[in-house]
Image 1 (cartoon, helix red, strand yellow):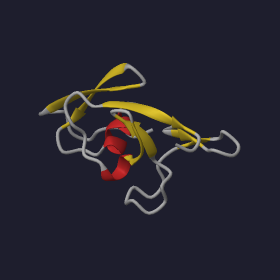
Image 2: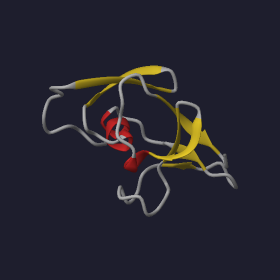
Image 3: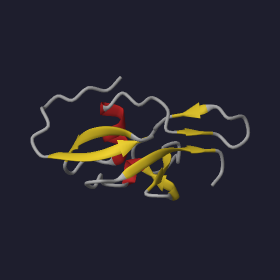
Image 4: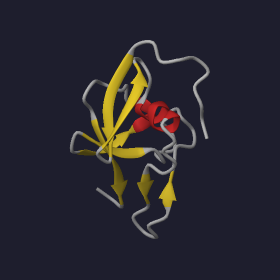
Length: 93
């Protein structure tokens, strides 16, 4: 899994699936989740297969999550914010 090369100097606190997590200010949601050892961000609508980020540049849509109750957010294109509530997206939203 992904590990940070630098320590967190400006922490941002958020939750994933209700679990408290910490990220570096300026990181994307995807980077923060990967650094927090989250392996699956969503389940596919057809088969329910777990998916994770692939391209990290907004092209593939494999990193879709629900952020603060809003589904279909691209985790790789969204900057983490203090108090953000992120959940795994299950199927089509």
